[in-house]
Length: 254
Ligand code: NAP
Image (cartoon, rainbow, N blue to C red):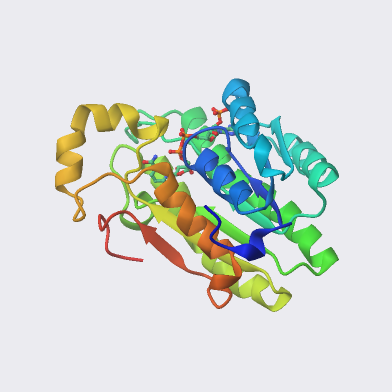
């Protein structure tokens, strides 16, 4: 479904595009005429299937393996994305993990793993992309994916919640820093979304989860992808620094 004509010819990076929200975002941007580069961590097969499913769109799709917690890998992926698509107009910082951990039992390695994948990666990609955008005077766009966990905290996932809270404050900081360069920075904060990440929890506690959601359903990946596309489009040209709640009413705060 084409929603935004201005996406035609835009070059987009989506981190963690092989599955879930990232895959739905790759799909939606491509179907709106954007060229898309995305990375995966382990899942070559899903990435290849996604690329093949978009072969009739006529846009360029580039994907590659890249562990987003490793700056050198991110640099390499960014360079290859630029070689394949051209300079980047839109960055969607989506890749992430959600691990369980009681704070008194969590090892230093477990803490660092979540921080490196969920937060350091956002700095790595944003650093490289904004440098290029400024050099090219691109009116660019960045959309970060946070979580309700970053707004209200999350017991037994405190490392995850800490990274998502940091992404919210990073978004607000960068919106004012980069606005004068013509770069908008926004955030989508999902609640429960039906993806691999949450599948086990939803299978075990589905009814309880739904009972806490005012709209009475658990959003799907595409429900998050549409607001991401909107924020990156010219339709949102006056919006920056926004924390966009997409949680079916689960957390009514920004
Ligand atoms: P998902 O289905 O588990 O997909 C995660 C994606 O991130 C995959 O493409 C995965 O690649 C990639 N990834 C994970 N670790 C990586 C690493 N070290 N390097 C590179 N890529 C890596 O997750 P999702 O539900 O779509 O979540 C996407 C974003 O939404 C995350 O930031 C998450 O925190 C946020 N979110 C999700 C929910 C939810 O309920 N699902 C709620 C709020 C926020 P592989 O396929 O190769 O493993």
